[in-house]
Length: 102
Ligand code: FES
Image (cartoon, rainbow, N blue to C red; front, side, top):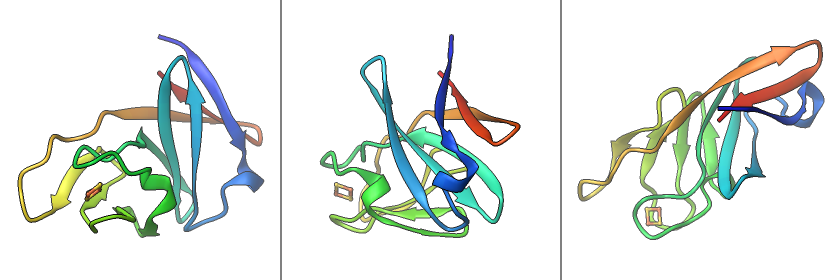
């Protein structure tokens, strides 16, 4: 397990997301009103990049077919069929840096 730098606090304003890549993983980092969360970025339906979708509170909506996910825990909220949940990761804020434990 390691810790990767996702960016500065100023890189992820409230209500925004970004994608970070490290060691072959693509991870979405989201800012829900000053609380940061991280989960896998790749939708388990057909592989869309969820960070290109929308964020409303902690709900991420897939840009392709509108599945919804909770970025707090990587769990599927709603979709027409069952999808595999996403891995979620611990986020650590130190000074103005945001780190993700992978
Ligand atoms: S690729 Fe995300 S819902 Fe289809």
